[in-house]
Image (cartoon, rainbow, N blue to C red; front, top):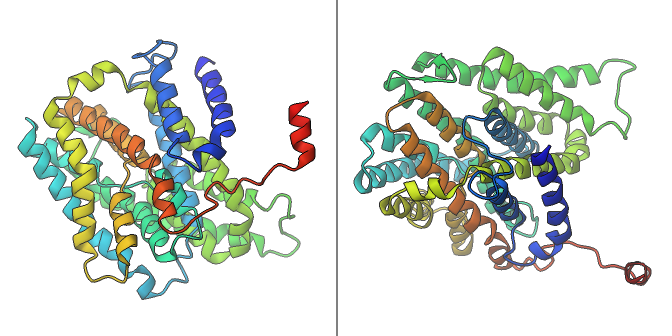
Length: 407
């Protein structure tokens, strides 16, 4: 209950300062991260969580699934043209492997991690998360091709990075969540996630079209939610890749029924925010002085270079000659934040028992914390480069409300 109380208080504070945060470098995401650090084992000790605590992996897993599903519903995956997807494809097909290779090389060169452990760091930090760039991705004032690039890239690279993590762990002969991994099993899980993500919305759409069936406007937003919950449960029961199923399921649902997507948009955004905040609070509780102290200076150098050098270089090289304008390319190169996917995959490595797993997790955790602080605090200033004036979108109070407030 202590954790729930802290979450409620943090949520209230974030709501009260959200208008200010949306206009300045103040970040509600960072607020939850700091709140978790204060009440965690490294702070007041009110919520002494450890990476082995069940709520840690559960919160990160649900947050990642929710964000991917809602991101998927915002894409018209079935109606895009080849030109529309060319830029994200280059970022995923060339930029992501280049990023993986550069982080692996930096880690092995600057730290005492062996090649396999260094490759695990590179794979775990390969995914990006647009949640911490909401002022960019969530604003229609920003060029559509930039928003689509960041959304599609982050939505797909989670599923692309997971097989690499699992295959690397399998190469060490260790397990993930108590189950042996192998290349054929990894590919089967990915295929299963793809199939589930396509079939679930198709089945739901078929039921809606049956005679005498149909949703009232009041309950229509719950239809996509029901599909998402079903995909999450079915993924767990069938052991398929839930993250790929989430993103594909959301995209197929949006392509089949734009009306349902529009009805779900506000609810989906709110659910994503709640899941994100809960995961950040839990992750913050794991950030103790001991964890930061156990990472060598060279580890911090790797973390900083991953954010300020590897991302810009890998994406910039992959998008040479693209249609993006210079300002758009600079924004995309900076916003490669590390988020929930990296948290989940880092926990997979930690729990696998592979050699140097703890050092890998510590380096990953530090990088994620630095990324959240840097990226969630810089999205508003970058958004203003695209002449987004009303970033907060907070309606002004009328005189009667102001009088009531003073009373």
